[in-house]
Structure formats: C-alpha cells, structure tokens
Length: 73
Image (cartoon, rainbow, N blue to C red; front, side, top):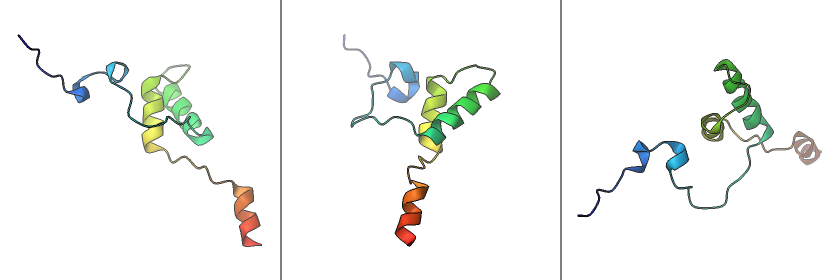
C-alpha cells in the first residue's frame, strides 16, 4: 500500500529538505538580530528557528558604507 505524501510545511524545519541553490551565511546584522531574539526568548544562543527568522525578515545590509562614500566623490 503506497504511503500518503507528506506536506513539507507540516514538518518541523530540521526534517525538511534544504532549499535548492547555494547557501549564504548570515550577515552581521542578521546574526545580531538572531542573538537578540534568542535573548528575548531566554536562550543563551540562537537556534535554527532564530537564524531562519533572521534570514527571512532582516535585510542583509551588505552595502559597505565606505564604498558608498567613494562613489559620491
């Protein structure tokens, strides 16, 4: 008897397949936001869910401020 397909959204994040494409590390802003969220929840370190939230909801902020000043000159 074939098994019923499972909706990935119903699985916890650690049991889901990784999304396609190359992964990127969190930016410094995203790491700080994940740490802040962990502290607010009473944890010493951010967990997978904190990191996933930061990756989705916090902008990367990759623009280098010194490079922006060079472009204006």
